[in-house]
Length: 212
Image (cartoon, rainbow, N blue to C red; front, side, top):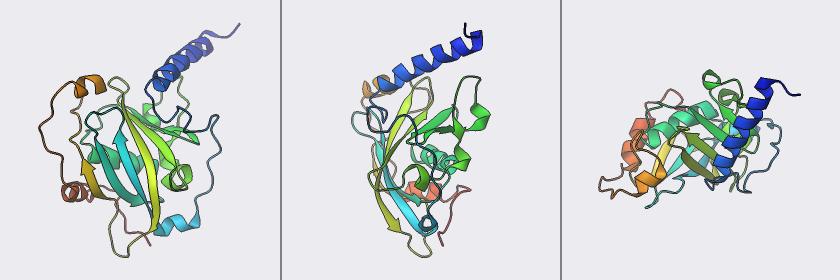
């Protein structure tokens, strides 16, 4: 007979899996299961940037951001980038869903999760090629799912500070507004921030770098 902790662990993980699959996120066939081992960081990652489109899943009208970030950016810093780009305030737990498994903040671990430390994984490791995809889930109650697609991997422009925003569509939801269904039920009249404004805000992050 399994121990009580193991049985509860299996039940909780099953419930969470069903919830994620029902949201139409990257687990619907786009990311391989079981996860593959985390590969070594490519040497080229020090001099390239990932151009990514980050979309708020299910938003009507669409809400997305197009960003350029260092290829060797740790997922822990990418989390800060996404919080800034979508106007979140880091009030809730989060996780990344990748081909190499789930990654998150060790300080948010519980007794049944199996997330690896997001600070030890770089973007180029979990999304090494154009068209690679990963997911970012913020606030396990409102369940804000973001689909991240790598559109291109480009040489970094000398002297340019990354990350920066190159395109914006739609104003994001407010914190604790009840989830995507409630967000879609409201007529939104507030303007989206400009790419210039978001780039200025991103410049204030501790992880901003000038690639070699």
